[in-house]
Length: 532
View 1: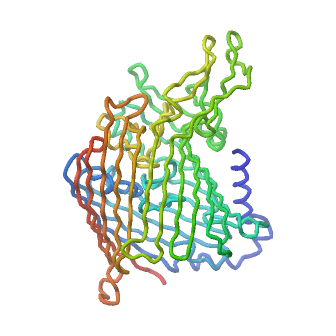
View 2: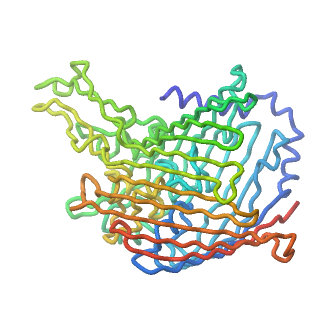
View 3: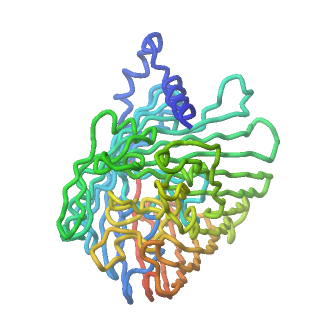
């Protein structure tokens, strides 16, 4: 894995072409600023949600890049300007940027800096700086429940990111092998929210740092009429650094985590140990480390396209490799590796999905079905070997939670798949994912009956069991339904309404995970071009 990640860095630098002779191409770089206002687009949006029950319905608030509220009634006004770097697709140097702000009522904050970023591209490589909404890989972003590691459920995290944003053809492979990926470092921005939510009585972290990396491989060639293609990927992320506050023995204890070069390296290549474990017999990798193995197979024909995919989540090495060393000695050699013995974990937890695209469909265009299972988590037993018992079993992975950091969340929303119930739903002041052991079935479909009208429908059934550390006394079930229609006014028939669209959504929940809720959401949007 280490060599694969280092190879991604080398490939990114090679794609950027950062060597002396490339800087002789001055035409693109000098004219990039003069082109920077061309095709500048704007977007304004007013959205309001009205609900009855305990919360706003689940799918009215999930997978919206964190610009949502679980409160019953809420409203926001949003405005932004954007320029896509692909506008300069005929140039070597390309520039994209965006500024996107919202004023909100009954949200986790009133003024929201949703996006603020700049993208600088050279050839196939990209340097991106700032907070930006980024799509999921290998899934339908409108119909899927969401990726387990790098999802679209939480607010964007400000970061510096380098990588290959689009598929890059590997030389000497005749176009059959393609790569893309990224490496990023950033910082969480939800310190104030954590203080308010916990009242500084339960675990929280200030100035926590963020790291993510991903590499994807595709075997396909669009120049040949060959229907099969394969995509595989590895997504990894970490929370590290900052200052953590934990109640220990009834006293709030401050833990200053490492923030130097070694901490950044251990986030990139998991290793080291957390600062509070320096004198412990056992040390976990520094920070909150997690990730997903991903695989997708596509079958593409003239009128339809079928994809089958798997997203396997892991929290530590037992989930990453499904293998743990278990050959320690006894007595004075209790911590010495003596035998070639390993513990093999089962491949049980996964998001398994299929999506069908009917390319000429109108009333029915896309169909998605997903099954998700997270109950195993390397098993219910966790035991570190000791002088008396040499067996080493690393179970109870406790997905999305961590002993030191307040979980895989940002502003109260989980960063990955929203079926892991977000901390915003907790009423005890704990920033914790309290329902991470569950199974779920999900069916969704969408269509475009006319060029102006499109719709989507989502339905999800979930059975939750809590967590290994805090199990529910009995399993809880939840049904969440959602239907949305959007209409874009035709400029040909109504020139005054050019760029205007209106959307209406209904959501319904029944169960004991997020409660019984019913609500509606009305969204009015205006888009256009400022500079052509």
